[in-house]
Image (tube, rainbow, N blue to C red; front, side):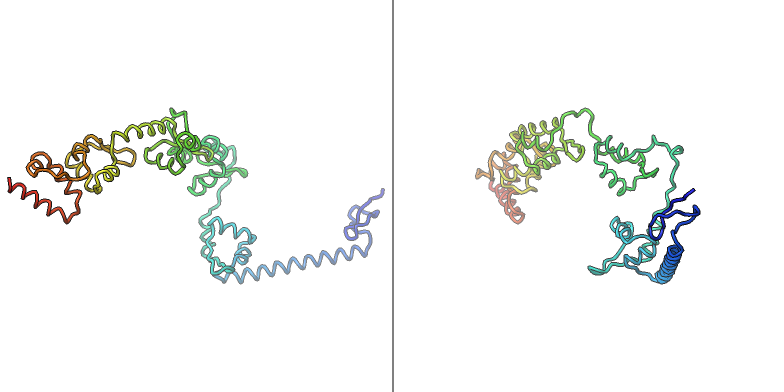
Length: 336
């Protein structure tokens, strides 16, 4: 029976006498033996160099990225990855020189204990989510799930290359983003721009001032159609009936403190509309007499009827003029 083999040195086919024969001739056998011995010597030399280098590195306190990779037995690219992910601290001394402390390497190893791989039969799947389940349930991107869980340290268990995140922590994290289930109609920013002619900055400002509910799905923001339409209609209606503090300041040339002083002294009802305080125009105009400044009238009439106007004038003038106004007021009393 012929045994056809291929020589492991020269690659030529030959007929072997034994099944264990690997070379076609004694010459190829000697060359193959010498090559094996040379490779073994090179491996031993490389191992000896690594041991000597590691013994030298063990005495150092600071390492370059290449030295840290040799000390830990990993590639230099993996050291760069650890530094980029902020798992390992490094200090950049110049554009081409960065060092890593031994203490930082030991701290990284202490802060990342070994996670036991839980067998699937002993693992309660109902108490955990996968990243895909979170993305599908809460309508977010899977990449955002990985980033969020890593930044907020959500408990997880790894099983056969898959991560399972704690259901309790995920539900608590998304609870603050929940909106009323009765809201079924929503605007996108493009819809509002087309309907009301508002810019995106104006839309965000209007939503913030009026506390309009919003939600975000797959990176797209939505605003409640019901609340937005009501806020726009009420804003147009109330504009003709109410003053804001800023509008009263511009109409009557008063300071902010003066407007609040008039409101407090005359007990004019006011309400909070979003971030603004507003009050009825009728009430404020009645106090101000429908004018923008103090009228020139008889002192006796001012004393009998227009005491509020005198106070308004006091608020309208600077602080140093208050004493003069009070002097004029008391002189009017003396003449009567």
